[in-house]
Image (cartoon, rainbow, N blue to C red; front, side, top):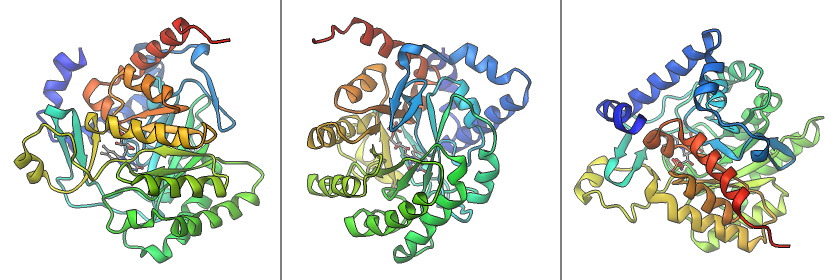
Amino acid sequence: MYKRFVRPILFRISCERIHDLTVKALRLAGLVPGGRALLGALYAHRSPRLEKEVFGMRFANPVGLAAGFDKNAECFRQLGALGFGFVEVGTVTPRAQSGNPKPRLFRLPQDRGLVNRMGLNNYGMEAVARNLRKPHRGLIVGVNISKNSLTPNENAPADYLKVFRRLYQWADYFVVNVSCPNVAQMTALQNRQSIADILVQLLEFRRGQNNYRPILLKISPDLTSEQVDDMIEVVVSHSLDGIVATNTAVSREGLTTPAATVARIGNGGMSGAPLTARSLETVRYISDKTQGRIPIIASGGIMTPEDARNMLDAGADLVQVYSGMIYEGPSIVKRICRYLKHVDATTPTMD
Ligand SMILES: Cc1cc2nc3c(=O)[nH]c(=O)nc-3n(C[C@H](O)[C@H](O)[C@H](O)COP(=O)(O)O)c2cc1C
């Protein structure tokens, strides 16, 4: 239904406009009595067999929505009603920022991919704090945090700390985003020392709190194996709670879209099907290297239930989708959940 009737209409309109309209529609659904219940009845697939415990938290199912869709925590409860076991809001920065000039979000339909250079547009931590106050029993809400684009890298730790402190009581877990390719110099933070400088402050603040909030690191798919090793080392040495692998890619490898079209789109992070193999490889690498000791959230090119299963088989504990929902529609969550339940039920256990 979505692919045959809805998607052809949506794909005629600019990608960002559709995104904004979808967020508005979801907000509206949250205001109508019974709106969330209706979304749940239409889309969610609930089963105790899908529940999973990861970094000390009980997830209703292992399928989450990746960061960047609900940047301002405007509709996370409706997204939960669609069946996601967890929703990662953000990226949130201390002050509001408008991001890069439009157009900044593009489809690559032939490759089932997207390219975005949004530039971490968001309303800032105060607005997000107000939105996050809404109760969300049964839904885990992560907050992805970063620095303002105009903050120089040497002052980055203070920015991360501001958002972390302000939103600490409202988030279930945090993701430190140093891998956005759309903010000048941000990925230069992806080295051991810069990340350690950020983490030390967050960990110190957390030590003084009564409630424990897991902290994860989100990494880029463009890293070399040596750089991934460095990221693993940072995570292990600071006893972080996990890794999100991966963000969008600068690389344009594996595209069938004509090179001239790709060149016309210009810079940005690539997501969707062209990223599947690379993200899977990164997840497998981290899991093998750490013998499965670090919880991994797989993100990148999960477009089908089989993609989700492959990520879990490669060592991921949870999966996130974004581009998959744009191409397959909101029923992708239900389809993945059903498939995982079925495959788990039919896979013989090895005693
Ligand atoms: C339009 C768009 C905006 C995004 N914004 C963010 C963001 O603000 N923070 C972040 O960590 N990742 C962001 N991402 C990356 C996604 O969270 C995800 O890691 C990436 O798209 C790979 O997953 P996918 O192939 O399922 O889309 C964004 C992705 C897209 C397509």
